[in-house]
Length: 507
Image (cartoon, rainbow, N blue to C red; front, side, top):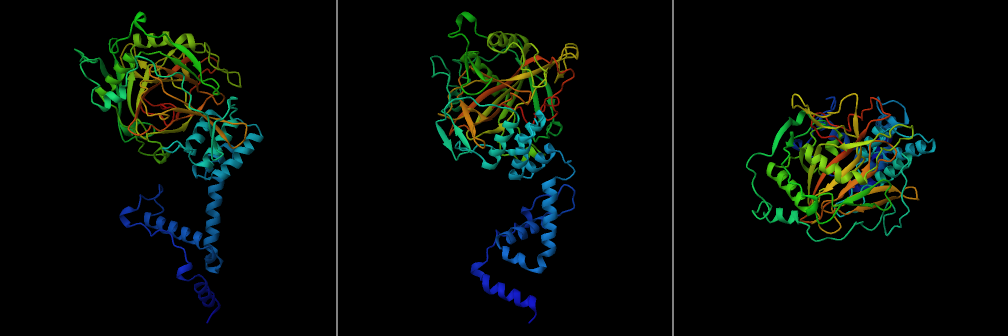
């Protein structure tokens, strides 16, 4: 008997059927996915390779055989290409991006530590891309997501210069996310309308609080097929413009409470303005959105298709001028008069208005939007001559770009301690994030900075509880693009003629 046969006999005797470990059976032919993007690897060959590698990983003693020499060499070459990145250059930024794309969080963390030690600040586009690739979505019960991804997020925020407040921590989860008590700016007050309850009971359009308009108050101003959106989407996107009488605004003398401001504890730059909208105004907005219909949103290709977020249904609304002016006048006393100035001295432009492009989102039970950093948006509008929808309607000589996110909460009847907007900041201990959850309050507007590496806040639209729903508007506060010249946000941050961005969604 030859030497190799003797070795094989010894392995069979030592491992035996009861000692061998097998992976799950290979999938049936019908379950195989599409070929690789280049078409070089057929689905059945890819599945065979995965099956073999998993089997060997669980039975490492087989790797000692000389017949495995070429396999180990090929595996090493593959790991080297994955570690160094294929055609992505050798910069730290590129190597971090490559590691995150391959879910090699340990490698990414080592590189992030190096970037932190060398005090190299990332560009906003890179920071947003890294956060997106981490895909550290919290679970439906509110517990933290992937721990390795969260450690990477913590280091990214430290590199970007994000600092945490000094609030005490009341709960600690797995030494990765320390959660403060949920912050609620005030308790429920008289006059709030339980809009989600009306929807569930099919009473949203009862004659007692709804009258059908005699003529259409909204019209389609732009439509984009799904395959033309960026990234490509399975569904089309329609923008609806409102007439000046679409939402009946409550006269000041009839308002129960005037707007007031409260800073979000421990979250630098974030604040809540209460009573910007009355419950009746919130109800009208939801009635209009439901009457026209919410659109679905699901990526058709690209990395967004692989992420864990369940995107909310949305209604894209280009708000009319009287509504915008009223909104702006109520909010103006409480917002920063000038934009933040970046570390390189840019910024500082004066506040000029509110972006007319409203994204009205409906989050149902268990829906959550992953941790992300919002991007800057231009001032959407209509061409004054042709009436054409313009993604950027400000003139080149007077460019306006957003620097603050505005989240308008339309309902408060959300199951207890769910549906919050949760901010994540680095704690005093490296590797541990602090989480501050803000409870939605009907008619309130949550404001926080975006559009620059320094000061932009990592946040999540946390899961909605059982049988619940959250209705929220995402829009932006516009500032003069002073100091930025021909500044444009990265293409991945904005949209092309009505298509959704990868980031910058509602929370």
